[in-house]
Image (cartoon, rainbow, N blue to C red):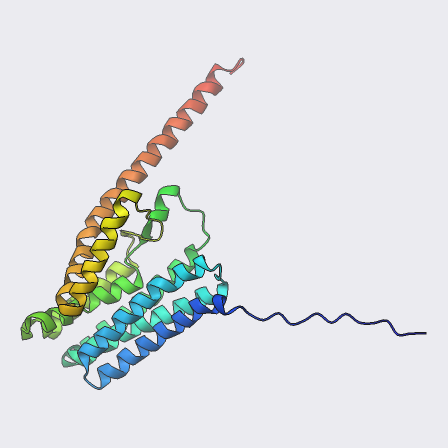
Length: 272
């Protein structure tokens, strides 16, 4: 009696396209680690550049994952760990080595506070993934996201690099900026999210010109360009609070109006 032939299923490989987002995330993690190494070697300008590179890689890995349909729980967890190192630990260590060490224990406490707040902000973000949020809330982050927080934290360094005034390097000034940024990350302040912003077709060319201009400025005046971007982001926070408040009030008014219509229908029913 012949033996039954077993069907062996071939092992399916993982497409390289699906690995690209995770590769970019790992590169961002490497950039954050490199920033810490450069900080310990007192190469502060190169360390800032490494954090900026990590931010750029973090900004494109998620979008590429969605375009390539390579999103996964593994990628999301890896992204959070990379963000904590690159935008929580690296900026805190960089500022501590740069100036906060002059405050001794107080400076270390501020650096720890920033890293802890970054971890809490990322944990809160992860718990909100897949949550049932109001429609108007999807265009906003809760608090300042980690990459933007890292950019705000290093503003004293950018000011010092651009203007050369040692007053920007005072530990009290840098510590105050770092503590304020930490508070913004764990706050409930709504900030704009660029993930769901749709650019009208008639504005596409103008936006490309602006991006090209910023790239040209970044190659000639990098610190001034980064400062301009940072201050524009700070100026957008009051606008995001205003927009969020208006959308929430409009949603509440619509909900109240709908509830009133239901009550009116119930009242008009026979026997009601």
